[in-house]
Image 1 (cartoon, one colour):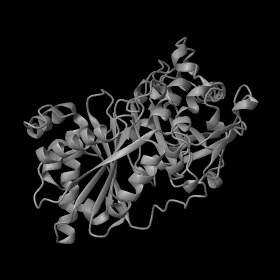
Image 2 (cartoon, rainbow, N blue to C red):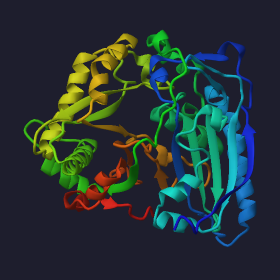
Image 3 (spheres, helix red, strand yellow):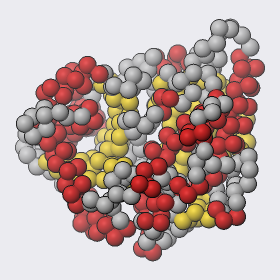
Length: 441
């Protein structure tokens, strides 16, 4: 299908903030959490069908109208999210010099339904303005946007943002603020972003000289991996919860049970291919904003995430034990860091876990959950998105979770070694609860 669908970029320009960044905000120090993020571009796709009555109307005029609205509102929003229009300087700071963001307009030679009926990774990549593995040197901007218009009048908004300037929380704040400006909403809490919010994390978790240098480029292709999409509906998650519940964890969350099943199936696939019972480690990203003990950080922008790790060495793994390990991991995390993670804690954790993460004979999985971030609320003026797609990195053993449209199910983007994926995509237990790449409509 990928060879049949063509996406052609017809226009590209730079969008600058509508008002210049004040001199006292022109340099933003990175926090230690910003420093630790690899330099790659986080992807997001928002799909909007043509909901207008005039389905067979002038789609070129519609595309021009919406493109202009997106550009004008993006310019206004960048005045609040001024670091996104700047330039990353080594691993020390962001120069907020109003360099701007890239805006691309593209045409797609098919109706939007063709993409949504059978989502294809190669096609989705064409709807994004930059490659995930890009660097600022290659991409040219910290933020890139691509508005792709389909033959039917539907559209997709593809956004790439450098991980150096923000995590999923920050990304969702930006997307919904931009949408609110575009919609002309009076919801000032979405639009007005106090400048101090960008410097809060760096003030309590300052950068470390140890990381004050150019970081090595993340290599995504060293070991061949395959990415697949699994979708868990609400009823299947409820069934999983009843199976995974125990006296230790009587009420597991939907993220816990979905993660546990993915971990179980991935571990079994790896052990089947290796022919040995290998230890398996699951690293779960944690949003630190409400775990720092400081109210100022609850709405702070930038990167403010850390992780906890759970390990299993048992010859047989089951959902109840894995869910218990997750719950124990987060409880121990809370006990260890009652006032949040500081810069020195970061160094200590890296020293303690670094050897474990790189040791041969151990399977390491890294999971990030975007569940509950309100990407499906992003109404730019033509309704809310029918599908929100995020793609995990191509690096093996990475997992990304996001909500389904109803907010009750979970979509999983999973990258594994080719031989492990061959087993997991035919795993009867997994396919009992999840659909493999179903239609997104």
